[in-house]
Length: 415
Ligand code: NAD
Image (cartoon, rainbow, N blue to C red; front, top):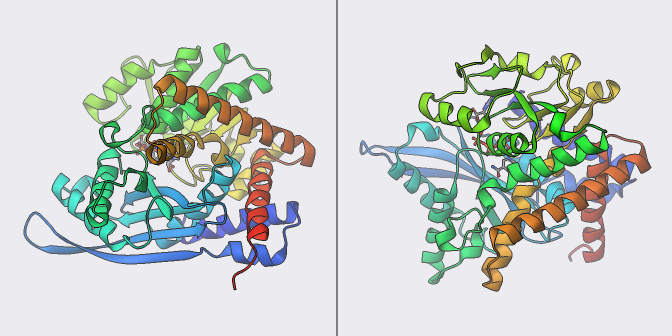
């Protein structure tokens, strides 16, 4: 997908949901624009002694329901447009999951694979310093996203705390457990995708134990989902990463495939399986296709070839609006990203509550709370789908948009 198109897609989705719930045009106009967009130039002393300047962004789309919440992404293709779209999607996601947050997102255009650990640390600390006035436990709470991790969050938390003069664990989520992180956060998104997958299979009358699944993306989200589905008895017949994919009719063991990827850097050439392309994986005849890589995986050019009965959006924005229409006409159920991958931000919320309240839950308690939340949200969306006779994305947007709109109306307009 072209970068410049992604914000237009977010606006198009907003417009469709606005029509559906007959949103007040003034509120629609407000929601088309992010509340605050920050662009920073981040100078870093590289290991070779030279200074390099990286572009960094943080977008706060809306905070009517609470502080902004959203990840920080390190990727060479990060653009302002992409961060704006992702921030808007976070507003809908936090509202749909009924968390007391708004939506935000950040990113730095860099190639993290080419940065040393100390360069990454200096980049993170300087980027944090440049955002000091805009983030905080009551303002905007970053979290990990593509190519950022708990170490990145620890550096942000430390930098922010240095300036405050005391520890502020609630400034970020996805931290190491040793400094106030929550058990189960690393797995939470994949676990949430798993809970939703099992639920939708049951609703479609497919026994999860006989379900045949394909998974695009074998990183944090894809791997955890694959492992839990495999434990449940699903047959994972195909998996791919950025280099390509593998297919095995009788299913692959995600644990062994993960070991293979750790050794070789890719899932390809996994013993006992056949190499396939990413395009072939997307077109496989299966019960469930899980998209856990990047945006725009299913689009106008390939959606018509999809043969899965159910599609689960583990990634953010993997299906374009054109593709959505095609899939709907083919009677394929698409579980939208703001529901399917909402487990990550939900457990982030638990972490933030722990930090503020200075309490701790066990992993079992966290997973139980997550399960309860995911199923409740799934049921809300399923009911709305039947009530409005629309696809699940439109139903999820309708619920989220109504909640955000209600908050804006209750607060009124200052001054
Ligand atoms: P990750 O970096 O751990 O994994 C991404 C995977 O996708 C890797 O296996 C990579 O090789 C693969 N990939 C990249 N480009 C590909 C391509 N063109 N074709 C096939 N595979 C490709 O990232 P992640 O944390 O698993 O996140 C994946 C998606 O889920 C992203 O869209 C992210 O925004 C979204 N997401 C993640 C979380 C989270 O908690 N990690 C939460 C919500 C949403």
